[in-house]
Image (cartoon, rainbow, N blue to C red; front, side, top):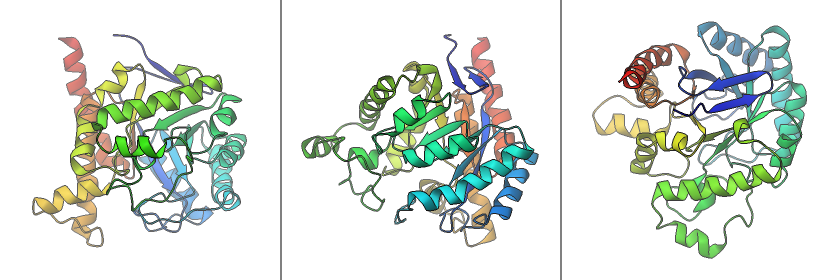
Length: 315
């Protein structure tokens, strides 16, 4: 099997290794998953160290919520939220840090502060300068398929904020995209994103691809992209997956009679259990990085899923 790699700074992730657990750190007052519990700098740093102590091997830091109904955060405010946290973590712990942003000015300042990866939920299509900012550094990039951009009039996309991307798709293409099978649409989107990367001189081995679970997708589409996650490796890239606490999992729980309301203790726990089951499945499929809120349940899931994956390799 081809040895795919993801290189960023001094780090390298190889194909067929156990998935890395990337702990989520939302430095926002309105996160859908943790209610802004880690918005203050000191609290955020404490949470980062907790995640690392539990076994996080990467951290993904975000200063803007992108949940349905969220509001745009000005560039300066996003930088002020994220940069001090990056600097403090890097001063005390040697761990890869990605920054969840689609804005090139935020990317530039966070890379200066020590960020190793830019996790762009628009896949370089939201901000026309993003690819060139990343291209001038040795940072890695996670490029996400964003159905909200590809088909903004889809019923599942209308509740999301805008992510730039003016003119990426023509009105005619946006209309056509409503009828394109989701896997075909994802690869069309990746093709466009990778053109931007090549134009900026970013090598293929500095890129991971994310199927964009939860962004303007139906439940069936979310599950289809997870089921077919191996196709990203067939396309020539390592796969990055973030399903932790996504709403479609809560819907599955509710449909099957399980507590799913995060305001209750049982519902809160069930969200992470359901998320970890996907991590086990994704590990068995050879996903390279799993972006999660709670490390411990996913750590066990990765152990089980990786055992299944290794058994398949040995056949």
